[in-house]
Amino acid sequence: MSQYSMDHLPPIPPEQTPVQQTFEASQSYLTLAFLQMGLGLVITAGIAFAFLILGGTSYLMAHPMISLVLLIAQLGIAAAFGIQMQKASAATLRTMFFAYAVLTGITFSSLGVVYTGSTLFYAFLISAVFYFCLAFVGLTTKRNLNSLGLICLVGLVVLLVASLVLALFGASMSILLYSSIGLILFTGITCWDVQRMKTIMAQVESDEPSRQKWTVYFALELYLDFINIFLYVLRLFAAGSGSSSRR
Image (cartoon, rainbow, N blue to C red; front, side):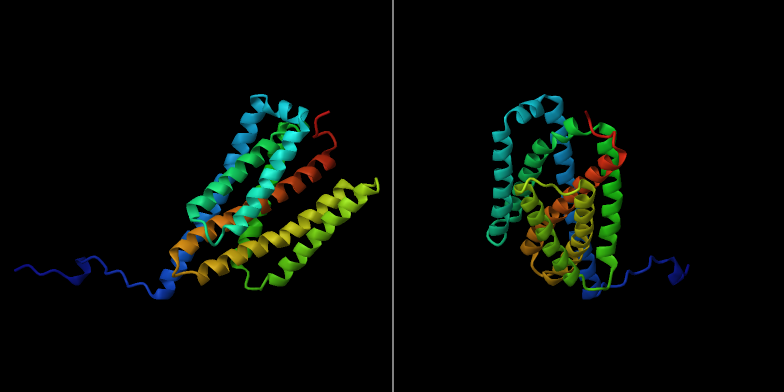
């Protein structure tokens, strides 16, 4: 009778420990949040391009009140998102997020009139690389970034208030200075948001509906971080090149 060595049998995979399962689940939800954030950016870029090509941007710029209505709608969605976080389903929150991305795309179509295509492309590329580095830091650092994040949030509020006060008195802050400070502040805020997402996903490991909702919540947070970084980089890039903006 032939005999077979145990070496010919397929290896038996080791059972996963609860810690391993929790880690893999957290990783999958982190990935889901980034994918939804990326989809939101694709929607914004697609809507902005289509709106510009179809001539909607010209109509929008000729009717400033429409831009104001769009801004109010965006603020309304953002406020409703926070209010409905506990009550609404993940699908509802996801719909609100994508609606926000669509509205942002419509308003961002005006960037195609102000800046050249090459300026927009290089600013986006720089922003994407910079954002990837910040996300990596937020996911891997062992330091608690709560203090840094709160300081940056306070700094952002101060920056916005200062720019408004200067505008009221007919003065203006240097674009280079304003954009540099804003970019530095969102550097800290982005790292903090990514670390908060990682921490919260691990804390709600046993609650599937909550995890689904948190992925959408952080998709919106990460989306807003990227949008702001892109705008600050765009201003710096255009101001630095001098000839990048359309005349």
